[in-house]
Length: 157
Image (cartoon, rainbow, N blue to C red; front, top):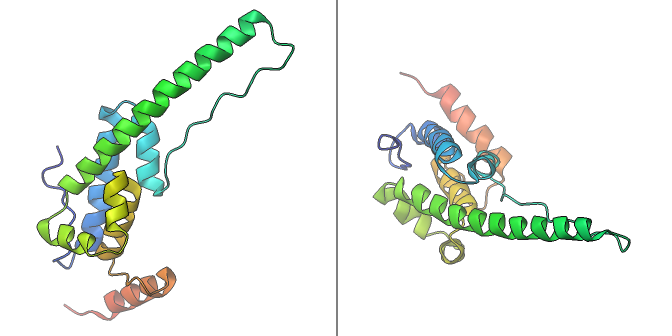
């Protein structure tokens, strides 16, 4: 399903390829993974997915309300474990869609050891995006976007 979608940094269309590949990965994760909608949203927004912890019951809560709260806490913990597992699977999926050239560039990043240690797909995607859009680490994003847009507008066939 994803074989034709690869993150690469050795072609002129690498920014467009990043966008298409990310869209396809988000669609795949959203439809195939447990907790897929949470992870899909995280991929699309490049922000980590979080769950809302159940609030403690009031001191005057009935036994039934306390029981329901306990069940909600158990369900929250199961979802938290699932989210962690599928987030790591997403990291592996994203890494698997990287060309060797892209992997080499990502591995050069200062924070790659931490990204790898935590199997963080959001930080991995962020790094891939920076490379695909030719954003230098010392450049402000808006400056990079301006320079990329200007270069595109001035290019001729």
